[in-house]
View 1 (cartoon, rainbow, N blue to C red):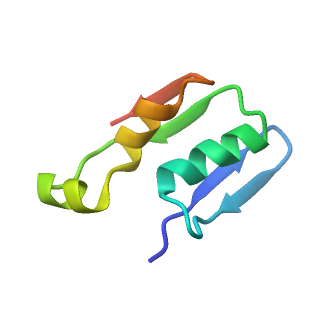
View 2: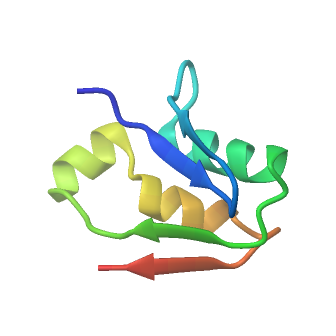
Length: 74
């Protein structure tokens, strides 16, 4: 099952699927492209081994989202 994100505004919604980038990079790029003023996402973790091997979108966003505020819900 592919991981995707929904970028929404007052009028439109768009499904964004990562192609050759990580999920975190895809979310940040889509936010920048749409000039989003806030990124809202769920935050949860997987096993340490899985996160070490595959990385984690939540950790990536927290490290790299310096241009806009992020609201995380667990």
